[in-house]
Length: 163
Image (tube, rainbow, N blue to C red):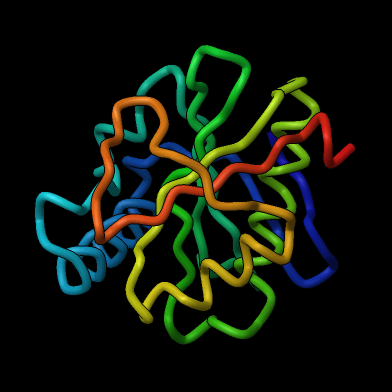
């Protein structure tokens, strides 16, 4: 699947083992470990993103990978937003917003009922939480295999209500 989220970005399905993707995944995991205790880091590594229930994408500008994101099928009509990450040097460029729009459009095209996510609760994650809120995500209880965790915020967007 290939799509252009805006004139400035190209978003393409990519294997997490692709060298550009693997480099972004490493940076994401390093950042998560630096910001949260290990037991509260829920980011998937490359092998976790290779599963058949996960669709993984890279966002590029002028051929350079700037952001990544994935949708995981939870098997109950919902999808989980996974591995949303934008390079520090690309933050504020609209790359994260473009990736989120793309993934939500994909979930809608798959007739998903909702999109859920887990993100951090600290101030480091405030820009991410604000982005999700701007799309209509609201706090929710833990879902799937998650448990209450003071380091986590759980959010959900009901796509039927948002349609």
